[in-house]
Amino acid sequence: MFFSVIIPTANRNNLLRKCLNNLMPEFQTIDSTRYEIIVTDDSKSNIEFEILKREFPFVKFIKGPQNGPATNRNNGAKFALGDWLIFIDDDCLPDYNILNAYHNEIIKGEYGAFEGCINADRAQLRYDENSPLNLKGGKFWSCNICINKEIYFSIGGFDECFQFPCLEDTDLYNRLKLVTKINFLENAMVIHPWRRMKKFTNYKKWIVSGQYSLKKNNTNKNIHYRSRRINLFIGSLFLETKKLMKYNLKGKSYYLEVIMFNFLMIFK
Image (cartoon, rainbow, N blue to C red; front, side):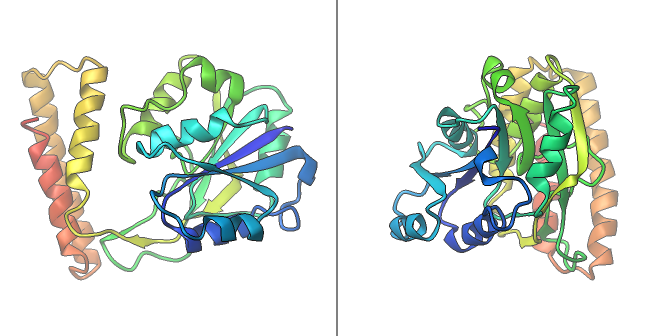
């Protein structure tokens, strides 16, 4: 087994179906014997679980630990038979050649991890639409990454103290860079459709993740740190306001949430 494709999910069955359809052997260009698909389900009660199993007999479905996305990804990795782990989120649409693209670069033997291309399905229409675009690399967003399994476990996988989908992939990226070379693959692509962000449900998660990251990295919250946070707030105020105006104030509640987060982090 060359690849283990790990998909963390929770209560998003319709999105998951679309993702899985694009990973089926009849859709992918790589031979079906070269990869497996693991869905680790973090939902507390999923009445469609058995239905999904019958719809996708090629897929291995396992129960998640219900302790956030970082723990759920690690849970999937524990069951992996492949030498390489590919993490794809359940709301992404993998390209038909994504596995083959990763394979062709891996066999060159130069890199221990890869970040794939993440594009959207159309142009952005509102400020409060979100898609974690990664068109040129340097992001390492966890909805499309590939890591050598031995290296992954050697650094402890995702840090499970990140209980929300925020900064856990950045943290993994920083640790991976210390032990291996990482490359960006434009042709290993997923489509991440734009999603409307819910009002005022994110900033507390951002703060919790941000605070933990600062503590983990022993960040000195001295006057220089506060000055950087003030400059970041002022810069975001101008940039985000300009962006909001571009979309004719559509999504202003999410704009206020972003600005509020950057302001509160000055004092955290």
